[in-house]
Amino acid sequence: MTVRTSGLHHVTAIGGDPQRNADFYLRTLGLRLVKTTVNFDDPGTYHLYYGDASGKPGSLMTFFPWPDAPAGRIGTGQATTTAFSIPEASLGWWKQHLSDHGVETTVDDRSLTFRDPDGLQLALVAHPQGDPRDPWDTKLVPAENAIRGLHSVTLSVSKEDATADLFTGGLGLTFHSQDGNRIRFQAGEGGPGAFADVLVTPDAPRGQVATGTVHHVAWRAPDEPTQAAWRDELLDQGVRVTSILDRQYFRSIYFREPGGTLLEVATDAPGFAIDEPLLELGRALKLPPWLEPRRDEIEHLLPKLKLPTENNPEQA
Image (cartoon, rainbow, N blue to C red; front, top):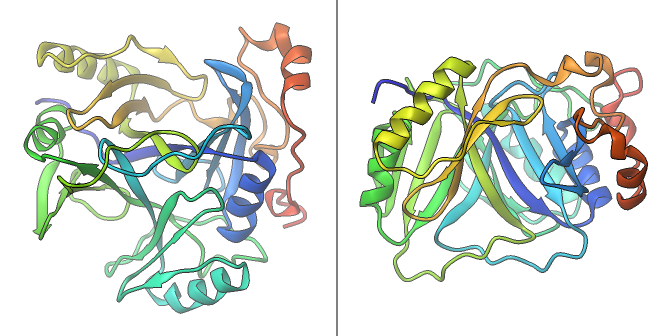
């Protein structure tokens, strides 16, 4: 394996009501909505991107909110927990903040686990070495406590060998540690945003991807030539990989790891400021050029979405 990822790019999940989704991730978790667009494969559905001030790779959680979709089932063959990184001294603040917003939590020494309004499993992790990434700062979630970005993802599998082989041979991850049936892998030197856990649960039911579950996990590629070389290597290994797809804000390839989870390799560039100013990210519906002629139709199909003031730098 000559190409290696530097860490997580984003996690994409399926939500329910888009207004409830935006209120939770903007107000309760204090993230910024950096892009309001649509699912390019289903343009009657929003694609909402949450992250730090500019939506840097590694800070991003994104959603396809389908109001009428059935509830999914969390189980093997999918990413089952998405964890965010917070300052080490912030666990107590977050426990109280989430309680104030009606969110039940489970606490251990360094993390809080909870669910979003659609049942998606989330965690906040205080990394002992800290996290130097700059957060989005709002009145509800001030910078000293705010989420720094993604910390890790957990994939649940019934057998670990083939998934571990794909992680090391296809993504360039390395073994970090093992705690019982949980095996941790890392990109590069590890740290927040560079961890993936494989949870081996042979007796758990197979997951069903729908509302409240993760759709896919994306890993970083620095540029398009690297991504193209990566795709060739995966094909040489017998992995079924899509063609390179234009996602407007990055380029993507998709494939499944042997346990069943859909993975993506996404480029760092060009980023979210290519079609609107940095201070105005997320405020307006943005469509790629090939969907712009259908704007009136698409806007008619989409539910109304009102952004909380926390997404507006002049008001937050």
